[in-house]
Length: 320
Image 1 (cartoon, rainbow, N blue to C red):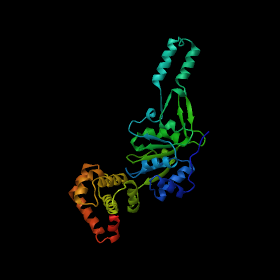
Image 2: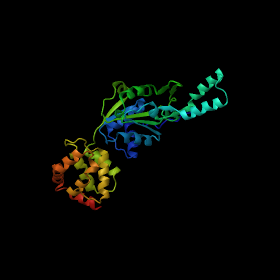
Image 3: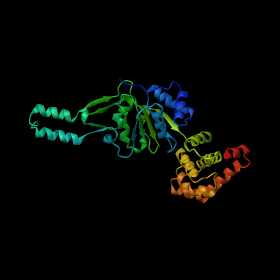
Image 4: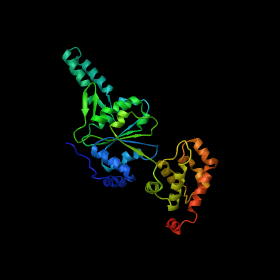
């Protein structure tokens, strides 16, 4: 008997469930999640690295109190790593036992041996197959699909469209009624995903957040900073994303940078503490060199200009 997931009844429910797991979603994303749950369709989420795509699936699994199964994609990913493989060591043991018992020579015994070698008990389940054999709907995260080879897109179609997986030696394994997985697929768009796969999904592009939402996220995920530092960090990162960088910092880097500055007992941004911690925000040498070459000074000057003459209550918030 299956036990179904708690089902949000509105977009507001989704916003509240995710917020309870410290995930700050905008209404468009919450709408996409609600529709994916209501229509029982996979949710395909694209966006720059570090904007919260993987964290969405993790927060959703906690909010729904569902098992999280994750396929981390990479070049060369195949069926054995993502779906299933046969327990070869156990199969060889069964063959040796049959030989020792002199059961190989009999035709009927051989047939029974072959059947036992390719029974469900001999399968080692990987995440895609596990997602179809749970009594209660899990959350299946197919992470960074763009890193896998293109043929893997085609392999996923059966799972996404039919909630089933065909094993040539055994047959078709289908999800139990009412226990189909909640599927979240992420991509950093380093390659185009096949249109046939996209058509089977609901699509959402996760963009960098605006300043207000990023400030809310950082307050939750990086506690301990002063209000002044929160505001300065978010304003600095928001400006940094307008520069011509190889890789602009994502929300994950904003959170990491805030935590790093708190660890260094930083109360407000200054040239020396920004320069010393650029490696937390930026992951490419050319981007760091560009910032050290003058862009950092320019951004800090702009930041100081906007905060000069700020209301006195900001200082009061720091004091508290």
